[in-house]
Image (cartoon, rainbow, N blue to C red; front, side, top):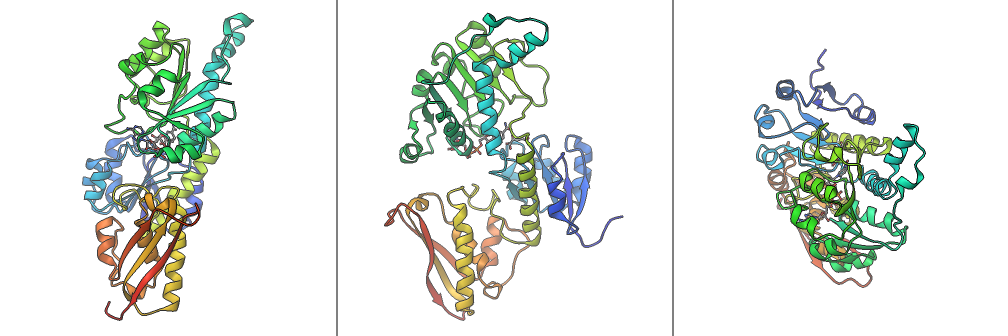
Length: 427
Ligand SMILES: NC(=O)C1=CN([C@@H]2O[C@H](COP(=O)(O)OP(=O)(O)OC[C@H]3O[C@@H](n4cnc5c(N)ncnc54)[C@H](O)[C@@H]3O)[C@@H](O)[C@H]2O)C=CC1
Ligand SMILES: O=C(O)CCC(=O)C(=O)O
């Protein structure tokens, strides 16, 4: 029986049991098969929150079917199945679980690389078929090899750290990462062409965007070293499957480990016919630990959103980007500083400036001032709006907040502080 007054949370895919333990009895949980379009469109009408993994397409049609929906939560990283601009347009908050499965995804990429380099699946299959063919399954070592990482974000970095333990030289292509940051990690930042021409193995860790779709095509593959191993545990379509299959068949590419496909689910791909390919059905995040974290993280974010609180993992709040891992710790610091400020000065100030210095000053910390607001007294705000999307957040706080940054800090450690408070009873 439906329980009045409780927000309805619609779960559209199989999620870890941790989700339900976080929700407790604060919400009414309903289930639907997100791949059954008509069932989804019907069920979403009365849902306050929608929880998905990667199989449910949450697009303008879904948002058009409901006026009730406040939050879409993606239990994982990639948001290519959620039309974020359409959500923002409708005032629906979108959250993901940006760190929940990154270790699992990085480990899976390592597993694929090793499986290809040592031909583990083919040898296993052959032995199980009753053959003892040691000479047929000679592989290559990773030691001393150059490994190219395309996309040096969270997963790319974790992959690189793990590969470094094999005594490899890591090079990376990522135009959005500074050479200084790469240097700190012991990684040489290069152009894509240089990476393609130098790497003995290449692992892709990019989001799927109009810019990255088809990045590794026939032209790019031509530039690679003969015998190169290619791994993709990021998204299908970043590599053009047919072009990769052709390069594998010609022997120019030595092997490939592929977890993701341009169409999913799928049981047919030109890659499936080739011996030097190891494939898995999008298993990068399929570990108990990752699923548990993804479930817990999105359930917590969903509750925050439904309560009208600030949601750190919201992706359509801070100017279209999630709060980066380097900035994240400062959110709670600024929140605590806001609470302290409230305790010391219960009268609302006209404005508060958050100063940040050092590394984080170049990592879009503007969100810290919002978080500081979240820590400040409710008496400082006029009303709290139902939605936490950017426009309404700005409207809801009477007290102005801003941030200032200085690139140089006395030490390499970054810091933030609430400063320049202008106490006034005006707002
Ligand atoms: N197979 C699986 O189950 C999983 C796959 N993924 C995929 O991995 C992707 C990466 O995840 P994270 O590392 O957490 O994301 P991230 O956002 O931390 O890193 C992505 C990196 O790609 C870089 N990048 C963006 N556009 C680029 C371009 N045009 N050229 C070169 N670099 C570019 C960014 O600067 C960033 O450093 C996700 O978007 C998702 O699609 C994530 C988790 C599990
Ligand atoms: O297993 C899943 O939910 C998909 C994981 C994934 O690809 C992601 O988080 O981006």
